[in-house]
Image 1 (cartoon, each protein chain N blue to C red):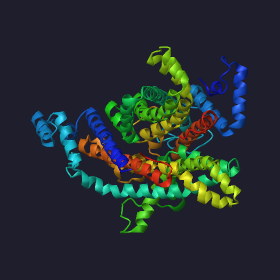
Image 2 (image 1 turned 90 degrees about the vertical axis):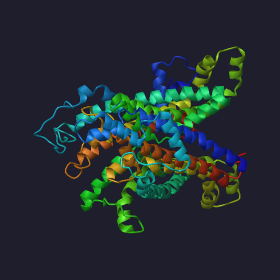
Image 3 (image 1 turned 135 degrees about the vertical axis):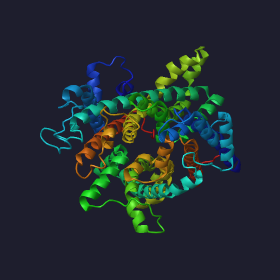
Image 4 (image 1 turned 180 degrees about the vertical axis):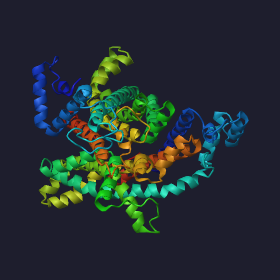
Amino acid sequence: MTPEEILTPQSKSVDAAAWVTALSRFARYQPLGAAGLLVVILMALTALLADWIAPFDFLETDYTLIMAPPSWEHWMGTDPFGRDLLSRIIHGSRTALTVGLVASLLGATLGLVIGVASAYFGGTIDMVVQRLLDIFMAFPLIILALTIVSIFGTGTLNVTLAITIPMVPRCARVVRSSALAIRELPYIDAARALGFGHGRIILRHMLPNVIAPYLIMLTAFMGQAILLEASLSFLGLGVQEPVAAWGLMLQGGAEQYAESAPWMAIFPGLAITVSVMAFNLFGDALRDVLDPKLRI
Amino acid sequence: MSGYLIRRILFMVPTLLGVAVLVFVLMRLIPGDIVSLRLAGEGGVVSAEALAAERARLGLDRPQWLQLVEWLGGLARFDFGISMWTGRPISYEIGLRFHLSLQIAVMSTLLATMLAIPLGAIAAVKQGTWIDYGVRLFAIAGLATPSFWLGILIILFLLIQFDWMPPIHFVPIWVDPIQNLSQLIWPAMATGYRYSAVAMRMTRSAVLEVMREDYIRTARAKGLMEKSILMRHALKNAMLPVVTVIGLEFAFLLGGLVVTEQVFNLNGLGMLFVRGVENHDYTLVQALVMLVATVFILTNFFVDLLYVWLDPRIRLD
């Protein structure tokens, strides 16, 4: 379900015109959020069309142009292998978005189901689930990710998994507190009185009503996942060469080349910052629209 | 109250026990063990007997449940044991680096708080103006900037502008405060920015919420100046959630500075963590995780107590 659909629940089938109206209203009341959304869309397009947009092959090495400064040909300069930085940043958006999207979708959705179920059943089950979540919350986030990567090995898929796990308890917490309030509402009692099963009540009647905190957590997670992936890749524990990833590009000597080739340190970091900022701006605006009282 | 305190303290035990079991299992799921890693590192073929003897020396030949029970028994007596990799007591390994990590965490907390509370409060009071937008953008950029990248930029700036690098060797602050600060102020800044962003956003939204309360209207109605309304009535009541995020971020900083330490070449707890995981140093990583988790849980506990102190309406029983 999209935010616009929640805003206008009466329209069952949202046609193109309604979308345009909703979007323009969003842009008018949440200009920063709309700007964020625009950057997110641009980023998604860049990731999709990376093969066509990138001026060079991101793997192509040119040993005559090692660490060349930005020029008309190589807008962002080249790295120690003579690879075009702009092309690597364009392809890096693919890594960042894929890892971010998969990890936050998985993490938030698992958290959603656990949070709602915990609130619905209550009592001992709720107590046990909450204590289990406490354990994962107390476990330092980056260290949990580090250990998981050590167990399963590096690589894009494992990094995604490592980022997903710490997100589950965080989302479950927020969703649970919203679900606790819903559990007491008469229509849940009605559903129970009608003899519906637990699964049906949870999935059909409770889940749709905690979709707002879920969506908010989801967008917040996107930014965090991109940051975490960059950190892990920077440490050499994330995505591996020759895959293009922003954190990895900063690791590739950016620090020691800082003096002679600062562009290598500046542009990939800028890409991370701008994209995370875009997701956060959009997420904030979404929160203001959907649930202004929620604090995350 | 005392009943609540006892219950809360007792509740910490199962959580810590869970963390202990989780880290114990996770460490042993990492393929390979410290013995083959260390002996193979010396090159050549190692006989099976030598491997077995080393495992026996480290106690790795015993059943896993026994290892777990003995380790937990040690924890209960605050005995972390000996690092499998260096052979030195873990309390010594941690003690060496704890000072550095703690100092950065404290400095970064101070920086963040000094920046966050005034800016967040001003943004809330001037809601909808360009000041508000400026502060919010500054905060949201802080959340988005990876602190390790900010660290790289700081080093880059110092190198290009002053042709100077922060010192690499750590000196305690009471020995040489100038050298100590000139090394640690930069990582504190790099992490402090993100930290202040989190606290700033919380301050802003909390002050906004409090400003809508009835007692603020009463204060206005009786003719108090806006300044004293903010300082005396709003800010104090808005501090609860701010204190929470500051506390939690502090706990996170103590053990989570892995990447920033790498950038600034600091030998703190974060690096110890990475090296421990790389070396399959079970006892060391287990002890470190327990330390960070304990700090986290205790911080949570003290924040809850602080709530009662700051807001007499909250009753814990």
